[in-house]
Length: 309
Image (cartoon, rainbow, N blue to C red; front, side, top):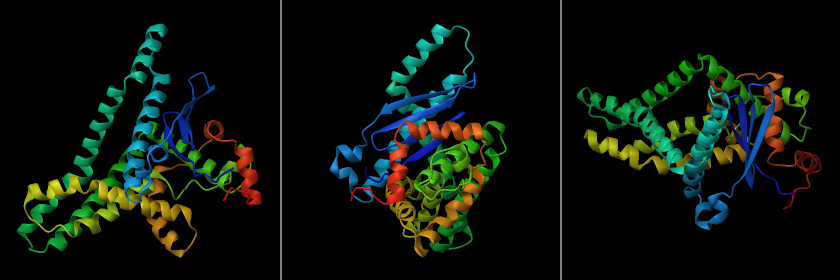
């Protein structure tokens, strides 16, 4: 068996795990049963060599993760929709799932909102500081600080919502399960519970690193023309995403002083986006892992260090 790095995402009352050839959605349904749906999936990086080039692979992976994440999130929500006519609901569910255009449209709309709030709004507000100073460096630093403040404020605010709290608990279950797997321990509720809810390859860490990297990248853009500032922020998003992916990839792959320093800010933010899960949530996360990998064989390889080279 080859060493793989499983990634995941918390969804509504469930967990999605993505393995090397598929991703699995496990959801605790209203009747308390766990339903697991496995979808075969070949990553763009496996289809096209160009998508594995450093920096480019970060952008491709980011888009893929958003697409799969949105798809599984929408799928998980369907288990909890109020049903007046079960057959009719199932028909609509199938139509929605097969409607790629609907999914892509939702994804694009979400991206536009996120870019507007977290990238363009701070740039727009910071531009007014040119009335007080001629220093582009100070304005760009202020923009970065404002961007971080908006992001952290947003996360802190939504963490108070009851439904989001439960999603953050599933997020914790996802991390604890992956940490248990990568430590070479059997995936039992008791073993998973012992592990930390923080993980270096988390999407939260990626977004936070994006915020940090953007400060340094935008320092090279020196203009007080508002439309040029806003356009530059949008055009440089792929560059920032590519660099951020390489940073988090390095931090998640190696265990040294440099990787620990790079991981520290993201792990701190995860104190907001993850919560300690209950046993039922851990069971769901384990089922999701079982959908994409034979964890018994994987754990054995970890213990014996017998992965294919």
